Amino acid sequence: MTTAQPQELDVQPTPLALLLLGREADPRSERGVECPGDLPSPSDPDLVARARAAKEKLGDKVFVLGHHYQRDEVIQFADVTGDSFKLARDAAARPEAEYIVFCGVHFMAESADILTSDDQKVVLPDLAAGCSMADMATAEQVAECWDVLTEAGIAEQVVPVSYMNSSADIKAFTGKHGGTICTSSNAERALNWAFEQGEKVLFLPDQHLGRNTAVRDLGMSLEDCVVYNPHRPNGGLTTQELRAAKMILWRGHCSVHGRFSLDSVNDVRERIPGVNVLVHPECKHEVVAAADYVGSTEYIIKALEAAPAGSKWAIGTELNLVRRLANRFAAEDKEIVFLDKTVCFCSTMNRIDLPHLVWALESLAEGTLVNRIEVDKETEAFAKLALERMLALP
Image (cartoon, one colour):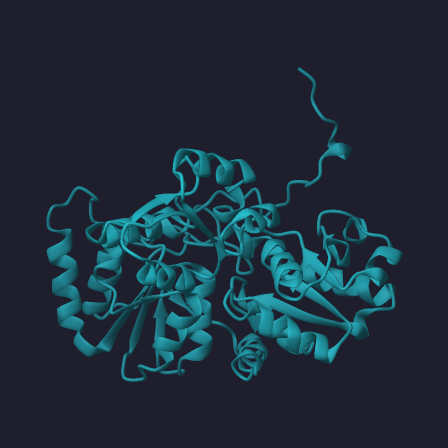
């Protein structure tokens, strides 16, 4: 067995990467700390009744948001379900709710805090429910990237576009530098807007969504895209490469959607003749190119709702949602399977379980505010500016 020398490694370990999930805290990281209280036992048969009782006691004071990727035991207590941006807007539309309990991950709760009033308090049942993609772009790394673009003489031509799946710091950077936020459903509109403002786009932090949108929707070539690697000097790119590129893609990805491969698509077509392959645009470009349909989480749900009875579907997105959709449409004789043979949940999303939800609700019912997610005012102002630009997109 041979071992690669340190200088040959593509990515060098960082202090952030070495944090033990749930054991350390970094205010600029999606990772958090352990729940500061005694959790109910996951084997407690009264958990469902306890959650109902606490939620009933809180009444209109609490509004529970449930992301589509949450497990069924949690989603049953959600007042509304949806993707991250829809849920943040739903929270802002409920000003009478004193507590917003966000069953999702850290960046989603930050967005809810940014969009809700100062009187509302956003709670994340487990502070260690983060997002590996959001962690792939820190404020320091992005500031260094901007310095590289400035030294290359192109910063004034570059408009940052950041995916919703990013930290408040990155959203604030985007707002401060004249950019906008996008979701997986409006990325094309966001990029069209950005290219009206400048000649180049810095797309953060998901390279696959940026590449797929540029090539599939805007008609660019793969050669128009370069990948900026924050772990390499100058992002691993020459000044000439940066000047020639139209899309500067951050080297980030979703750990769930990034696992789907072209082999997954070919295999499911062999196993299930006539299957429709429907994938999320966070998947790799070759997977998106081989799929029959591509779209956001909401698009996937609506496509299956409209699908004819007896149709067959292989879905490339998080397993909790795929399994829920398969159960929902089984009575309509729609066959819905997970695209990959290997089971894959979003590990950090799944940290929000019933014990954590019960603990959070019971604490709030007893008058104790726990696990509040609060974005500082300066960061909030610039992040909100970027979000407002997205809301104003034509």
